Image (cartoon, rainbow over all chains, first blue to last red; front, side, top):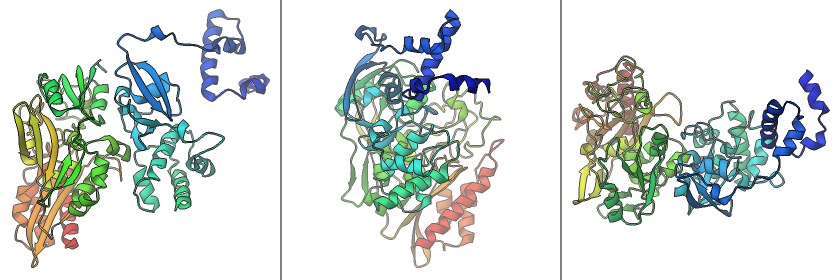
Length: 217
Length: 334
C-alpha cells in the first residue's frame, strides 16, 4: 500500500504523456542512477536520460551492412548486423515496438507483420532480404485517433488480457479479411491458429474478428 | 547465430556456381540457398545450421504454378505454400495437396514457405534441435539421444539404429501419393528424380537426407495427371486441432470402377523417417472392393514393418486407424 501512496504523490501531469515503454525505460534508468549516486530522485534522473540521443553515423558496429527498409510507407536507411531479423530491426533500430517478440522461432505469431500485404512472421525474416518489400506494422494499420476497425473491435470485444499477442493477432486478422476463408467461427480459429494467446482470450478475439467480417460482408 | 554473408543472385547458373563451392548440400552445408527461410532461419538461430554464406534465390524466376499439356501441373520451387494451396487448378486436380498444405504450419508461415523449401524441411526431433545433445543427423557419430529418450513424436517406419527422426512435412506426403517428380539443375545439367527416390533412408548416414549434391538447385516439381475419376484426400491426426505436426497422417488417391478399386496410391506422414509411400497397402487394395475389411487389411500391411520406440507405440494403431478412416472417406467421394 505504501507503494500505492507514493505513486499518488507523483503529479499526474508529468506521467500522462509518457508511454508505458518510455516510463519503464526511464524508471529503469532512474533506479540505476539512484543506486549509483544514491541521492537523485527518480524524476530528476528521468529528465536526465530523456534528452534526445542521436546516433553518430560512424558508431555502426563492426560487420554491419547498409540497408533500406520501407516500413508503413516510409523508407529508412540504416545499418544492421546481417543476422538481424526484420523483427529486431523494427524494434531495436527503428523503434516500432508495437511488433512483439514472443518465441522468436515462428511458433507464436506475436511478431506478425505484413510483407507486401501478406502476413508473415517477422522473426524469421532477415532484414537484408526484405529491402524491396513494403512492410506494414501495427503502427501502420491504425492510430489511436483513427483506429483500424479490427483495433476498435478488439477494444469493443475485449479481445485481450495482457495484450502482448494483440498486435500480432490484429495484423494476422487484418490479413485474414483479405484472404479466402469460410464464414464460421471455426474458420477464424483455423485462420488465426498461428497466433497464440496464453491468456486464452480466444472467444473474444474470434468475436472481434467476426464482427469485422460481418461488417465487411 | 553464427555470422554469415548474404549473396543475392539473379540467375540460376549464378546460384549453382556459388552453392557448388559448398562442402555438402546436406546437414552442415557451409553455403546454403535461402528462399522463405521459415525453416532455415529457425535452425540458424539454434546453431543447428551454421552456413558461412547464404545464397538468396528469391529473385530467380521459379515461382510459377502452371498447368501442363499432359494434364499434370508444374509447381515452381519458389511458389509459396499458400499460393499452391489456394491455386484453383491445384484444388480441383489435387485436393490432397491443397489439404495437406493447408494442414501444415500457420497462414503466416505458408505465405513465406516454398515448394522446394518444404521438400527439404528438417525434422522436429528435439535432440536434432538442441546442440547440447548427441544427434547423428546433426553431428555424425555423436549418437542418437532419441532412442530411449523423448521419442513420442518420432518415426516408427524406415528408422535405423542411428536415427529415428520423423519427416515433418505434410506437403511431401501428398507429393508422395501423387508420385511427383523433383526437377533439379546442377553442375552437370538437369535431372529428374522421382519423389520416391529423392529422400534417403537414414541408415548409418542420417545426415544425408536427399540426393542433392553441392550446386544442385531444385527448380520445380511436376505432378502427373491422375486418372479421370480419381478422388484424393489428406487426413492429419495431431495433438491439437491446428498448427501442429502430425502424429499420423494419410494421403490417399483412389479411383473406383464397377465397385472395385482401379487405382490406388497411399502415403503416410508422422510415422516415417521419410515421406512414406506404402506400396504394401496399395497391393492389398488394388482391384479389391472398397470394404472396411479391405481397408483394415491395407492398414495392417502398411504398418507391418513398424518398429515403435519407448514412447510412440501408440502410433502403430493410430496410423492404422488414420489410414482406414482416410480410405473410407475417399471411397465415399466416388
